[in-house]
Image (cartoon, rainbow, N blue to C red):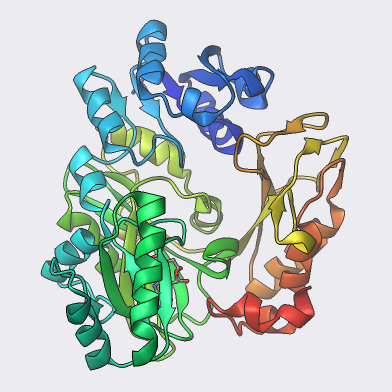
Length: 450
Ligand code: ADP
């Protein structure tokens, strides 16, 4: 096992990783920018190295500086967390050139999942189900339109280089195609510098169900069940849960096995998430694979009793997976609510300010809070304005949901506008309680939420 690792991240996920490293007796090195000189992750780590000015481009995204910090401190491995350098194949390659272990998948797996159309080609060959559509090289508008006409409307145009919900456009009829195509291409070019498009059947009431997978380098692979992340705002997740409601054992096993097939098709190692759309008729389709630890991994930890960061460290150090599929059991139900500094009454504009008061629910075996801030800290303009992840667990979905609403009510934050009331309103809608949820949930329940 490593004796010292560097965490190339900040905020809650840096703190989360440090906690597990400490538990395992591994020394930790934090990195920080000007804005984070006094941040919680810097205090928690054994050592800290300054990277540069506050903007991420001048600090957390500088792979060379991060690598130099690892060299200087004698760290044997780098955990990239999520975001920043976590899916940057150049950084992953540079780590191996410098003989530092990148705690994540091999570079080839990151590259294979970097383009949505290339990923689909691989999954098609591996016989993983795909949403009907066209993801070919011929980018002539007539070819894409013919594919759309043939499968029938509505369709979804997607930038193959896309991410974060950008470069996507719904087209509802044949005569809207041309305008939609031009608009999607423009957005893709300005966001990703690449306007290659694919076209998919647009499912009107799908759920977003994703499978947590883990592979080691001894040919072992398991899935740690699923998460339902259908409650989304502009394709950003709001409240996640595990397991997914209304999921038969047979479907769980089928999706789990498909996810393992997806991971094995790209020679995967470490923690990964295979995202599927689950249609109302029970069909499911591969969407993409995220080659990192996800924000919402704690709900999986709560229902499986496993520490996924510990698994990542063990696999990266060359050990076998801690458990086999048969040894993994699913217990109870968990929710995660993402508490953000943002203003739901002003188009969810990020909010900044000082956390003059930060009173959190008391943590227990039922309530967990993953955060990177303390009372008195500043929420700045420089980074993702997430304040905390509130995670709750209980034996059943109904009981866990009660825990969630109670804990949301116990939060007291002053000095910064937050989305806590919005989260409470989502969690208390009848539709959420009755599991009437698909990716259009927030839009359909607007009058109850806002
Ligand atoms: P990104 O990489 O930009 O996040 P994804 O392909 O992962 O894009 O899709 C993000 C979200 O868009 C999904 O969670 C789902 O809500 C919606 N979505 C994607 N593809 C389809 C589709 N074919 N039909 C309906 N909704 C879709």
